[in-house]
Image: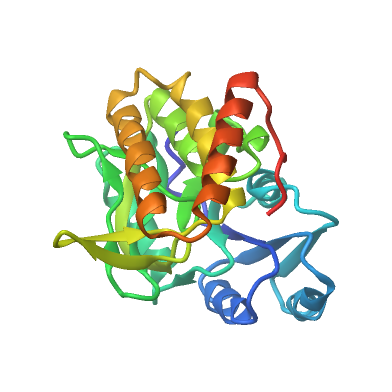
Length: 294
């Protein structure tokens, strides 16, 4: 499964947008300078975004795919990945609209892949994540033996041959845990996630920091809608991947710690707990796809 050394490296970046801040144009310009092509999949943004999308349409080596409604992160990623693979790109890099890459990000990611002893075992190359606001490194979750358990979609790079082997992103999840499900699937097929020193500047949620009884911790402040999807999809994945104990145990602990943070420091506590209860019910009853507006 190892790509041929003589094969020309052609990288297509897939960026999913949904009512993006105007600064996303700068992020895409920086990205476009390091890849062969950028495909932007807009997930039904408001009309105010259209002028910016038209600007991207005029850029060389940039394509915009417009969805009439929010189809979810997995469906949008699949549209972008299909575009890339249909046109013969042999590497796909996926990004959120607010992520910003560092200088030489793509070359560093590819060099990390080349330097690994067995690149044929690698499913995903993950970057080094730095919080955009605080400048603090965000470590990836690892098992006790150092194996990376999962990584975020944003900043990940995958050989096209791996995507063909593993299949598309799971659209039944709609959003949240789409990246984790893909990573779990890859690892259960015997493949690994590799981390590069290439830096991606990214923030998750509206992170705030608090101190209680001398202990400093961060709260993500996700909306009630996001809490619904996080809860539902987390529980859905815990059933088929319960034997992946290093990952499952972390998720069980996260359920407890996140509920405590909501109760202690976050706004709209009861709205979020009701959304989490609804997510639990829907996970147990098998409801999938888009169920809650964001």
